[in-house]
Length: 134
Image (tube, rainbow, N blue to C red):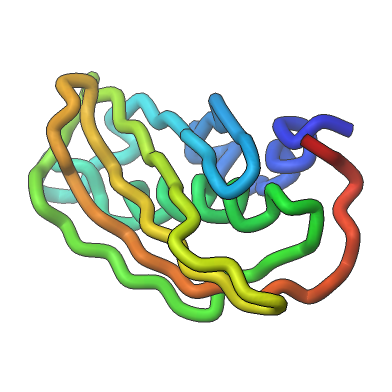
């Protein structure tokens, strides 16, 4: 099984339209094309859509070592709005890796490279082996 096949099983992110486009050890990149279904009442991208995009990028980077990892806590800061037709990218970078914990920073940018949001998360590695290798 490839990492992309494994993360396609994240039904919520998949149904939201999040696509994992790159994964390597301690790093991943995901994309989301903003459509009408991603908008809030103010006609801007809903915060939950941004969180979901960042969360899938986090999951891919944190699980890239081949051991099942889950988020312990996450924090998102919204910096710029986006809307229909925007293409958003989430790049997850590993900042710390311990025996059972890790810390990741995810930047969400738009198609112009402008920073839309930042997301940080701490994770816990359960120790269960995953069905893929990089």
